[in-house]
Length: 253
Image (tube, rainbow, N blue to C red; front, side, top):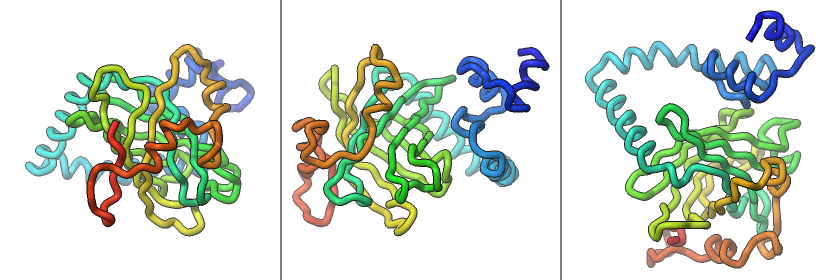
């Protein structure tokens, strides 16, 4: 990439292609969703990483820090060897506490890069429920582990790092699969910030469908909408096999 072209990107007189943007992000160690943030938000995000470097290096020098680092590396290595069949695009559905009786239908992409599996989530929120004004499309990035045929995802909001969530899904126990059931744990919209848990269903999408078409399908839908298939609706409404009213569990695949 020549200096003249890069200078045009910095001045805002030219927009990089997807391939060029990926090169820039890889060089600086950031995500494409992060590098397009407003300057003040991007600065705050990078500054937070800078502040975290010193404690992390001190932790790495300790016996406990080295042990935890090895454990995480082994988890990533094991996951990357077994997670290939789950890579790709999905719709995911869950009952949102912000709108009673409504299902959030959102988009997820699981991808592998240099031995680490990443998640990219896109959700459409109503203006009053967006984490930040003007961000009706919420973007979330995270890390994916496959441990004991359970897919575990920890992600955070690109536009608002206060939004951190965890999702655990059943793996495919009978070979091929189209739906994966699980539980997601997060926080309600910006007003109340109430922690909540909800059953969640991932629906595998064809790689032949254009990305724009997939994103056009996301949004909020009534639970009885024709957009929500009976199989997905049943998994969202039906409890798991734990016979306790005090434990919230997922439906098995």
